[in-house]
Amino acid sequence: MSSHKKHICFIGLLLLPGFSGWGQTDSIKKYRYQFSISRSSAEKSFLQKDVTKGNADTTDAIVRGYVHDYNNNPVMAASIVFYTQKDSLKKGCYSDSLGLFNLSLSAGTYKMKITSTGFTPFIINQFQTGIGEIRELEFKLGMLSGTSTYLIESEKKLSKKELKKLKEKYQSEN
Image (cartoon, rainbow, N blue to C red; front, top):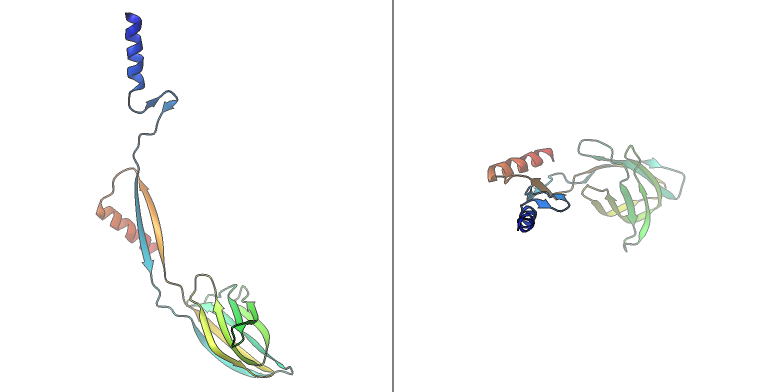
């Protein structure tokens, strides 16, 4: 009879919450909250300067310039691409670490597109170059609008007030 009692006590220990034959289990409950923050930008990309500096002894036009953001920081690796009027790629280049670019292009009329990750693209549908023309351009790129989503884990249930404060904190950081 005493062996029977020991067996019942052992089963009782196995049924205790949080206990397993392999060790203690994690019994902490986690709460997950998700929220999104939209940011819109009033900044628009635009051509800030377009000056013809003269003519070179060449049949090609020289197009050079500078790409920067609204804080006048250079935009590195901006793509500057010229397309024929039938939307086929003609020529392109990237801005360097100082935001500068330079290329030669046959005289004609092109569609020009400036793009860079995180910035609003800028398109000129009718960009015309002349024989031997030297053009200097300056582009100011605006930030893209977008939405960021955050996943927050907590060991306690958060109130609406606490969630609002968290959301405001993330909004102010971005």
